[in-house]
Length: 272
Image: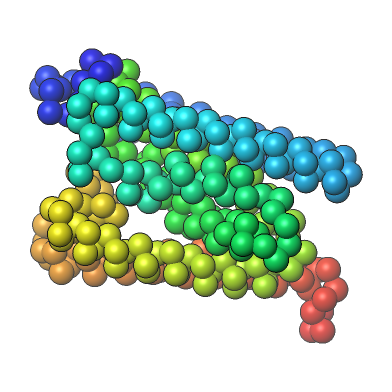
């Protein structure tokens, strides 16, 4: 069972959403994210020591995220099922590469390409990376695999570790010296990443018959299945993209409100 791909799975070996083991995974990664955020916040004593310790922690966690992504796609290639349908092109699959790259570009020289890339990747990891990882954990599309299958293990572990990295990123954002400026910059980069990715994946999916970023149809565990069944493709796409836009507005609306409150509390707002 460990090595089997979906084409070779016997009937009846899958699991139901929110079954006991699924709930255990969710609880472990939620608690783990909270504890890792506390650990990350306390890292280092002075400013320089804190930056060095956090950079080391980011790179170690980034390595493990890359490792589980490598296991997932490497084993898929070894067992002969690496095809155009299993490329690492979904948002969370891209995070297996983008998160480690974000960690590696941390501490880049101010004004350098590395620093600009780090800033752009930070926005992509914050949103949609963190939300995408948690959406995948809550609505995993690999539950038809037994929990001891390599795709199930790497899926839960990869997405779970991304959630831990996201918790650390939230701590960094909360300590930003110019939170409003950072939030606006991240919003611009997030919208650019999402828009460019959605357009590229739409045409790629149409050309190849794949469904990366779910631009042609929802996954088997998607909450948008009802919209697809009732409204067809048009209804699904409207609901899907509309929800993505609404969630983006909500996430950054909350972040900007908190940033403005932080600025007032720090005495930088004339109205304060």
